[in-house]
Length: 384
Image 1 (cartoon, one colour):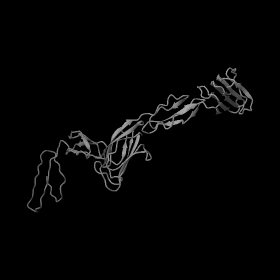
Image 2 (cartoon, rainbow, N blue to C red):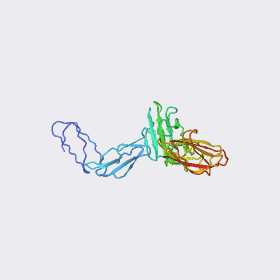
Image 3 (cartoon, one colour):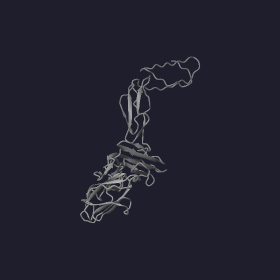
Image 4 (cartoon, one colour):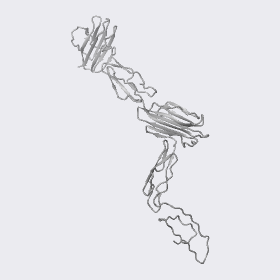
């Protein structure tokens, strides 16, 4: 090998376990000569890779075409390439440098358990940090938070935990200083953590673990008398709606949502389906029940129903149940919207069940009770 130059030669690698160097000088000009350093390199295996701080290596084989992988400790994010392989060629070397394990400023966690670290942990966090982490769990789960380390500049650098996904969600913990915070139970499947540091006095920060736990369901609304419940989910954040059977009126809120809170409960009381004492009815067919049906009506009832169907139709009434104790209790029907209209009949128990029919599209029905016996009635009507 002959090299005559004043420039430093490139790095040389031998491909055997022996290297022969020959230096030759002629009779003319002398020069300063050379100095070289050598070190052995493995021809069969790559050098032991550097394991990242806060991480570990998986795989011990370092020969050509071997692959080793790197993983980070809980809470750290891998930066770089997680798998590196020992390349073929005259010299064994890895195809990528080993990665780093970084405690990042913020992030999203969508697994059932994990660790959250302040940026740079266990080193000091940087100044002027604003970091937001969010935990997203399946509906019906909350997060159990347990602190392992906590050290921030008192009153200036703080960690805030919110029971929900928004900046406006309820704050359930705000911590600053040196005291280790107590464990917390969030009652939302989405949790927000916000960390702020100012321009001075940086400290090691915090480390805490979280674990999903199953929230109880809200109380079962079934059985819902005289109506139906729509929606089968009774978990936190889920809603159900209530509908009454024809002839019944919903008393209360029709839509209820299972609340976030330390105890599971709906945001309103369960509604009821009750028979109204009178009212304006505009459907072309339906049913009128005695007040309180299927229980007996109470004494001293005075209820009026005005039925209005489409123009051009009359109204046919059919008493399918008539247990009205006359003469103190009775039902009066008028062929029109007022009591001055023609009477279609006065009905009590034992009366012949002749279905009355109107000559107009409106019928007024009035029920009055003075006895103390109670009773029941059910009137079907149809526009025809």
